[in-house]
Amino acid sequence: MAAVGGPGRAGMQAVDRVAAVLEALAESGGGQSLSALAARTGLPKTTVHRICSALERVGYVRVDAATGRRGLGPALLRLATIGRRDLRSLLEPYLERLSRDLNETVDLAVLDDLQVLFIAQHPAPQRELMAIARVGAHFPAYTMASGRVLLAQLPPDELRRRLPARLEPAPGGRRVLRRELLRELEDVRAGGLGYEREEMRPGICAVAVAVRDADGRAASIAVPMPAARFHENEEAVAAALLRLRDEIQRELGNA
Picture 1 (spheres, rainbow, N blue to C red):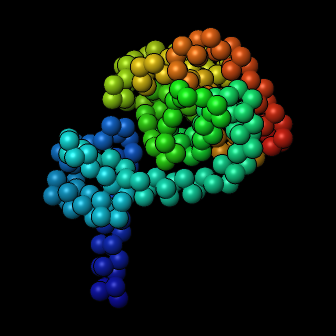
Picture 2 (picture 1 turned 90 degrees about the horizontal axis):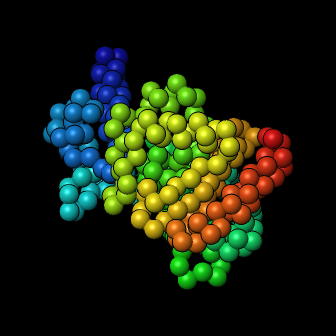
């Protein structure tokens, strides 16, 4: 019996270590070096390297060739997307209709720790200039309209506990200050709308709302667009999103 128990404990320890590395990667929007991962997880650097190498082989971890930083890989993101397919299928008709009515791209995203994970998209049917985020991509939630409406769904105390003291900007994006974000999320809770005004990428703006299904799962519906077009149509797009949110909540019995 002792021989059986020993390997079992070792196996559980290995699983715990893999989970710790994946959680650390999920918390680090821009990726992490091996040294940073080791410091964050408390594991030896050699152990972290061995785990990352194994996960990289199956696509659960990716390595930025330029910086050597590790991030969550496409295979893991696909698994997360599969887990949300019911919610995506439920909302697809609404996304398609909104995209057609506005002639704008419409995104559907969920919160994955403090990251936004895009799970569906309807590109603008008749636009040459569009703002596109790949399905399966993830970004720091605090940099995007989609993420802000989802962060606003969290209890304020939990949000303050989970947000890091320093919010790193997206590559090429503008820095977001923690105290300003917390104030903005109070407005999001009050008005139901989250905005992104070039914080993620220069020249791109967006507005978003959050919806919940009968099981309480939250998703964001966002309309991103070039800044010039956004400023001309901001109020109309915001009003359309609020109407759609209310319609979805009524039809899902979650108004």
